Image 1: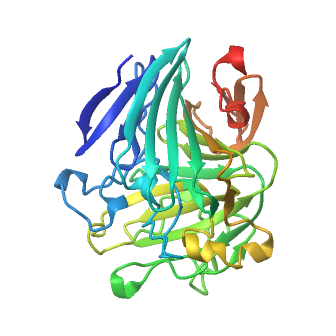
Image 2: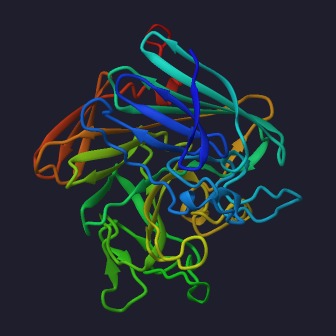
Length: 385
């Protein structure tokens, strides 16, 4: 089968669809958005698209030009120059053009395959985005052949935030602890403001150290709040497999979720952006939520992550070692499900055979079909699992 190519919100994009989901991914940087779930009933489009897209501007920062939705970062983070390597913010996989390898349907699985040859540190990276008939799920697989040595990496999933304050509730699988960004992530002189105190440890997203004496802590699990600030913080998952993150959109009555292997992506970063950046191209108008599953020293980039740092001293790996001899696969799952009235936040998820049951704090339940063994196998063809 053929994928459709069209310009979507200023970016040439490949389009794939099945009976439940339609997905667009940009040629430049492989940014995935919009994604329409439940497309034939009451459509849900959870992913963010940056507000400057319709202005057709060049931002001067390559990753910002197509900025939207989810994209794979190799390396993840700010990425200052190191040992002759200059990867740029979030790496080539998030900023250069991908090449189409094919689009096919096998059984009930539709898969788009893209490829990129990284130049800064030689590698071939293969991106596969798959949809399963009847499911509101995107299965993401990145196979890295080369890129030998230590690196940061991660998925930069970014959701659009509603205008209604405190209407989105974040929950995660059990965490060891949380850590705020190691250094100030906002510079008021440059038109950026942060509410979270840098370099602090915390136990719960509901009580994160702030820059103020009163309140000394703030709730970073209930959003949007604190208009005028932009913050970065992270939680370190327990090693139980799989680890998960959810965002419950209470007014719209759906849950967005991600599933990952915490041995590859040990941290989940929250980029809480609520009109807190006033320089170009942000211009004080950006509101989004990054729920970014990564291996790295927050968003600091490759050079700081390679050195002993505040996170490694707490036993948190901030780089992953890749081999020249065997490819590394990063498998990842994202999806949505509709939830009943009164479903306030996810308390826990039960993992049954190819099905997840989401339990809310209020006692409500919702279920979703998900082939989560994909995280281990990278395979969706049931005959070959």
